[in-house]
Image 1: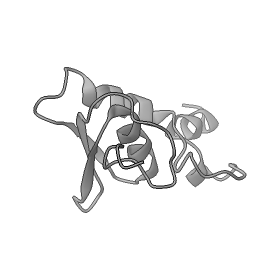
Image 2: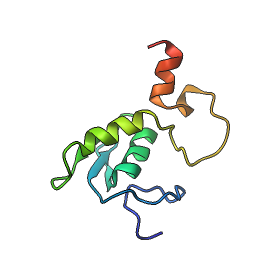
Image 3: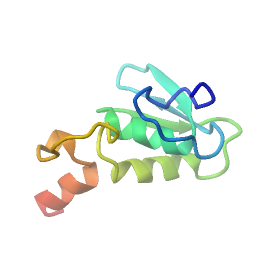
Image 4: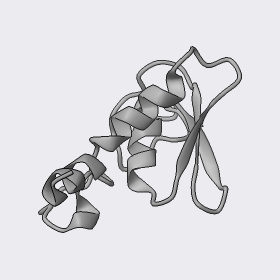
Length: 99
């Protein structure tokens, strides 16, 4: 799967959706560029991460990535029980808290 973007985790076997358009940085500033699909999955898996559009990104790429990440569970390609807050999406945690 060498044709996938740098943001695609090796264990995440999903294909890229569109071109590389965003950069996802973790809390220390390390990051990877990726398609919106893998950017969102990476963003959902990192605490304190942020997303930025690349210079040639279409309008709204970072917003779409951020919005998608909200509903994605961290490391969603890993199977297993998902009951702890750290294993749920941000949206699921907000719903549990009544927000």
